[in-house]
Length: 142
Image (cartoon, rainbow, N blue to C red):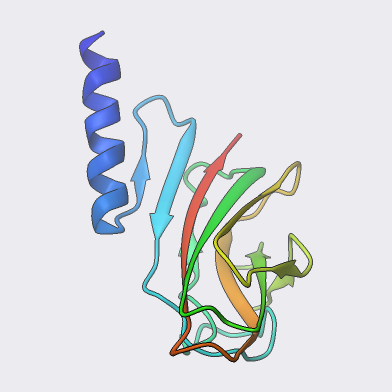
């Protein structure tokens, strides 16, 4: 019981501060990124962080194959399209794990049975609204 409570406290703390976390039993990996503020090229190759892409997050310690993304959207964008991107070569080449996901309001989506060593979130469109932002939160598991 103490382990469960301690694990829950660590998970909540990690989520609040956008930190990565691997639970003691290795089942889940969590990551929060800074808000994205512009559309760009979906799942662009390379490691550059832009206003349309998060930094690649190394998940090789757990090699998750099931992924959940929550996109917290503010500013009421007229169009918003996001993808979960994955890499199996250390972040040199990226491909879409999820396909296009509409995000004109906050949304959660799931990707199953698609292992990756690194993940990132990419916006291919973000227009309209009042200074719209999209804050991605990731949880991956086996």
